[in-house]
Amino acid sequence: MESNEDKTATFVRLLRANDRRLSTYVHASVPSWADAEDILQETSVRLWEQFDRFELGTNFGAWACTIARYVIMSHREKKSRDKLHFSQEVLDLIDEQIDKSLAEYDVRLEALPKCIDELSEGNRQLLALCYDSDMKIKEVADLLNRTANATYLAVSRVRQWLYSCIERRVGGQQSG
Image (tube, rainbow, N blue to C red; front, side, top):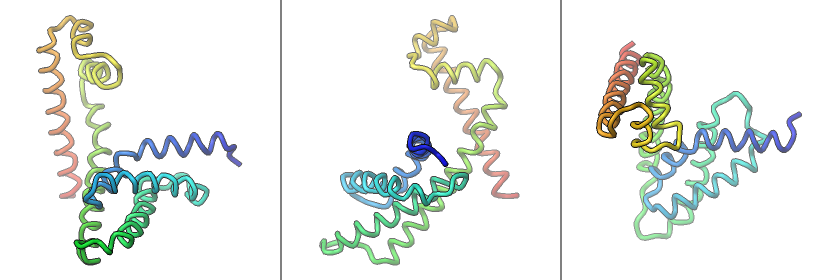
């Protein structure tokens, strides 16, 4: 059995890994930024309260979005007295579109490390210096004996190449 410290660490790790997905889902579902932030807080509490029910090894992001969906539904019920609200059919269509977008995001995110593996060692090092460290672009440029402008240009080219690589991989999965 997992200790409370291990359980907490596992929960925090999974929540942080899925934070952007969950935030995107909630903010796309709720028009008010403040309401979305309240829903995210409530969802985090509910996720923790129900974490014992989560089956490790399954998709935490999908589970978290399902919990968020229920919190959003509860929020919508409370707000139903407002002058303007969407019908359930419209809300279902919005949820469907969000689910589709999140699925596309997941496919792209899955392709990214494969594309990074195709980069030269120098370009992988450049990305690591720019994105995995606290270094500013000028510091990276100095370290690599380049100008800041040349470094910006190199990073831009690598990002464009990664974007194209992801598009090729995603396009290949959708047509195959």
